[in-house]
Image (cartoon, rainbow over all chains, first blue to last red):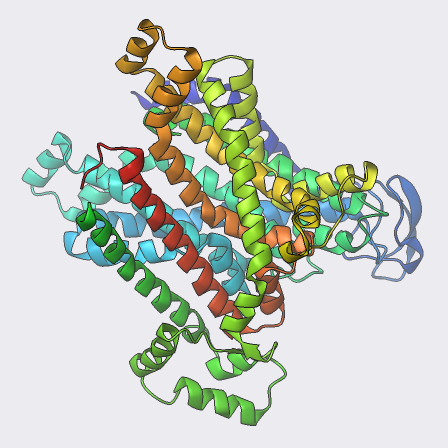
Length: 293
Length: 313
């Protein structure tokens, strides 16, 4: 199918439209966070602790000025504005989700191409990947972040590592199929260098399933980052992430459930949107995979 | 068949070996002194020197692995410096709640997901099918802890039907045990229902397209018998497989669920150990969970022989 035709079919898919619109909105929120009526998410005021949503109160800026502020989503037990923290939290989630997907794809593509094309490497590399896949993903992520101490980079790497075998296996299976195609045979016969065959002929034909896989990896990464933060083993607690806000709010959940619910809703909607986008992409780009699940 | 079982059992040995190597390397490839990391923040120089000697850290890395792996094979997972006990003992003490939670979750999930999946496949394209597919995307997307808090708020706080937190040992009676475990298990089963129902639907749908289904209907079998005896029976292998693969998700879910509902199991122990930087315990737990995961999948592979008589290796 021609690329233009395929793009058109993707753009007409309802799931793709819904998912992509919500994600675009979230990206806009992340970029425009300072102009959405937020204050610095690290600001707090002892006088504004545990406010219910919609209440006004004071907030002290870094310069020591006291401002009147309406706490749209209430405040936490330090007197920080939950609305501002949730809005800024969008940045962390999207950055972690996208960066993890890109990293897992990049490393997975490299390993998959090598494994599918260099037969001597295949056995060793794939046994190694089997080993990683035998360890539950969240445990790898938790252990690595705990060892390295939480920062955006360590969190991204720690979540990407258990996802790499999935991408590697996908690319490897695609390479094994595609390398038997007549056009690859023709390229080999013409004396095309291996590097050029891999990147010029094989990789472009892997793009559609990889895009689908990348979307699901992104959703998974956003979820795992939130879980790590929520358990207290992710990014430092002062960083505004949805998981951290919920972790802070859980102690007072019985009296102030909004501390947990607002970030929870943002998290669920974002992951849902990415998954719906992935489903739509899979249905349109990769009908074979769509039939399997 | 004996050959098949033997081959399958032997095939898991290299996987477990690689898992052991990876878990071993986890600590060695991290910058810093492994002995100091192992000992945690509260240890003194003497304790660190003691650990260094025990682990053989002054020897080449292969020798270090030999010592560590030898201990592992004799069931010695090392000693927790935080809990001051053997890691193996610690795991034994915390096993019951986790096993209870996981077992109850799987039972609930299978009992709900398989009939739903069959119905969705049977009336493919109908409202139940659409609702189920929508629900399964939701199930994958709503994080376990968000769902847990929604359920706590609704079922425990508003309706007051079930306790908010805690765990009762099975030894104290099945009633209180179930009463405390019901909400965590329901929470955790949502993700699992989504996964199993999806696969059940897809594979039963495949089976229902086969000629033998038409034959079964043509000879006048009741529809229920067609669906279960001919549809489900032929769809069993992928369903059982996904239950096995889902164990990895279940273990991740257990860690979160136990933390939210304050259940003193292995998941809670994992988080506590990580927060206390108790690495011997973390290492032991990762090995233990991975071992269980590989073992369950091995057992599931072996059931193929019984589920599908055509599989004769």
